[in-house]
Amino acid sequence: MKNLDFSHLFQGLGTLFDSDWVTAVMRLGLISLGILLVYLGRKGVLEPLVMIPMGLGMVAINAGVLFMPGGLHGNLFLDPMISEPNKLMDAMQINFLQPIYALTFSNGLIACFVFMGIGSLLDIGYLLQKPYTSMFLALCAELGTFLTLPIAHAMGLSLKDSASIAMVGGADGPMVLFTSLWLSKSLFVPITVVAYLYLGLTYGGYPYLVKLMVPKRLRAIKMVRTAKPKNYSPSAKLSFAVILCTILCLLFPVAAPLFFSLFIGVAVRESGMKHVQDFIGGPLLYGSTFFLGTLLGVLCDAHLLLDPIILKLLILGIIALLISGIGGILGGYVMYFIKKGNFNPVIGIAGVSCVPTTVKVAQKIVSKANPESFIMPEALGANICGVLTTAIITGIYITLMK
Image 1 (cartoon, one colour):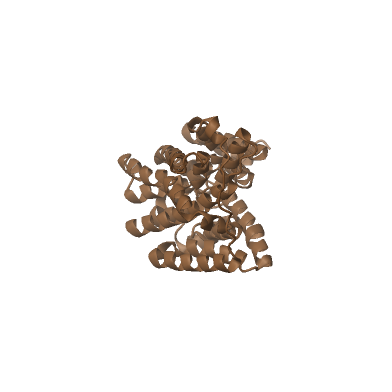
Image 2 (tube, helix red, strand yellow):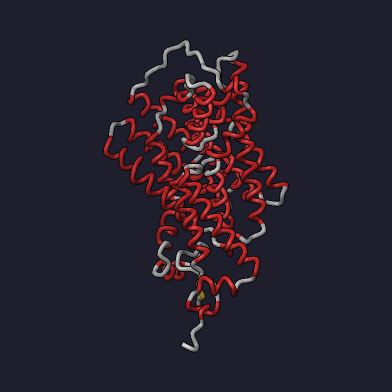
């Protein structure tokens, strides 16, 4: 007992005191941030399905650091930097999350699973109701995806890295994950973490942007629908999905896994395979999203995030989302003037393709201003088109810069 070394008995604390002060402060800061994410997820301020496992993973990875052979610091969760097959096989026998990371996360499979689940929940009939309006709003809401690329390049990032962080403006996590896998392998982890941290903030942050840009009298607009909504048959929707999937895969083969995943979900929904739809839109979607959040949390290792480029990524991520939100609202104003006042400009924010968060944000804000105003159909159309537009931009960026 006299020779008992408490730093090796309680290694989480031991490695904390053994680290340099920058790493120690970073670890403590990430632990605090993780606790905050769990709290905000539980309160419903942020998306709980992603933020609660992500926050707890962030706490565990930065608290559970131990002494490894040779005096190095490490953990028993996963090592995202392994690329040699032999070392990977060894790590998969030790790190308990390494198999999930290597077989589903680092190859984009988990992103495709999430996209498949999203597809099974989408009713593309809303897009077919007013396709041109939806496409226009979706393009406006991609303003951050376009403008952030030259801004990031001017800040010293390569074109590939700039394109990857610019995709945060599309507010679609699987797209960011997929793009960074292709273009920015070295920055894949921090870009994906930054993206999901910010996507969780859209539910809490975009309402303030909408209220700042749209006065209450315009938020309260109740649109008069002169034409009766068209009812598209499941066969028509399925045909549309198959044709669109074919065209997009022909144009952008590099993004074909994303297109296929989305449209197979739509096809399952419209073909009446209820049991399969329940699985894809239930256990597969929620399970993939849960593990996605968990893996993102344990990737928030202080050693990985101490790279000076992280600050640039944090700044660029918030710029991308802010510009996209502004672009969507400005698109809503354009439609307001085109429709001579018979259009609620708040719908524009739904063009930012964070499904279905921005739709819920738009309807919630409008309902507070006027309980009789119902904008959900138009918002869903813009939102679904936003998903497709973000996938197309993903294909364009990867094709041009690969």
